[in-house]
Figure (cartoon, each protein chain N blue to C red):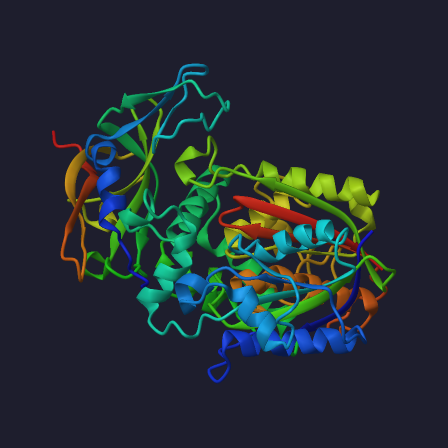
Amino acid sequence: MYSWLSVPSYWRSRSRRYMLIGGKCNNCDYKFFPFRRTCPRCGSHLISEEKLPRKGRVLDYTVVHNPPRGYEYYTPYVIALVELENGAKVLTQLTDVDPEEVKEGMEVEMSLRILRVCGESGFIAYGYKFRPVVK
Amino acid sequence: MASILGAGLMKVSSHWNMSIEDLAFEAAEQAMRDANTEKVDAIIVANAFSGVANGQENLAAHIASNLGMARKPSFKIELEGASGGAALVAACSLLNRYDRILLIGVEKLSDVTSLEDISSVVSSSINREHEGILGATVYSHHALMMREYMRRYKLEERDFGHFPIMMHENAINVPHAQLRFKVSMKEYIESPYVSTPLKLMDIPSEADGAAAIILSRSDGPVKVAGIGFSGNEAIITHRVDSLDLENVTSAFNMAMQEAGIGIKDLDFIQIHDTSSVLAYLQIESLGLSDKGKAARDTENGKFRRDGEIPINPEGGMKARGYPVGASGIYQLAESYMQLKGAADGYQIQGAKNCAVVSLGGLASSCIVAVLRR
């Protein structure tokens, strides 16, 4: 009951989640994620889908020590607010990095990863995570 | 104008031997006794998590039936932590139809017995499909705001200790408070991380609780003098500035304007301190401190029970306890007792006006009520 993850709910947002497709406001040029049909900044309904850049930098981050059900295996993990190159903000897990090495301003890039494996149904949920830029 | 005729509340705790209906019954009985009435015309239940935590929906009907009021109209209002505030707004409007309304806030979280499950339950308030799936929790949201606040105003972790220390101090004399013990700065610093830099001491512990008030059109000892309600983006990345709680400011201004009073007229304020950083942001959005200065003002005693403008004289969510959906009704019941002079042991002498801030999510909803004796 507590760790509910519905297959249809995962399925319907998969392409936007796999490819980082957000919204772009055609009135005020605000870019945002996740996609929706109204602009969070100016309220306009003139929104188009926008494939967002895969690179950005860490604005704020936190190391999670009390995970929800289904994420125990990954604990402790890092949740970060990343600002992409075009200014859109994305909430994400950071991966391929020691939590102690994460810093504000760190350059990161998107990578497709397993988000969680769901208990009884057994399906594997994929989605974006971000990792330090590989130079 | 709506009046509060009576109030009741239970100790915030883990009430292992009581069901959600039992809790509601107890608080409702107390409130009816206090109001010296046996009859109400409608019931509004404020609750956040009965569906996900207790597997119980149709909650208002079950609570009404258990009260022996199966024939009465009943409603449940859910807006996470702001359920109580939202229930008050709804009740004030419904007074056109029902003369006397029983508002019950109730939350039953001790049925959920593991840390992971509790984390899941309370994190159902963030967006499940876009945020929850990433492993984000309601605490990781607070933590991101705390990090941003620390960076913007060049603060350290210890600066956030002043608020919980004050809340614990306030709760000591409050019989219905959950955590009636003092906390030192050393204990704050040494408390474990929930989600860095957010510590266990920055947040309330989940608990059971129930509080109730009787609201009426007719004259009563405490009046609802003004109400303001304003929202904010519910998904954190949709906020242009993650620390902007402008909706708290505007809800507060609305309520104060309706009440026709100024900030100097307030004898105390109840805020919704689900984390130290959210407390500081509210203090600043209410205009009680300059931006980035709430920690300093808290340290200097400005908001103590004997300070310039007392905040949360009962210990707030942090120490009185945080029965989520019931918390707004707790604030109202406590304020009613303060204004009536019935807050024995934690009374603010001569209190006449107060403001109550009820928040949902990370201030995605803000209701402010001004109460007057």
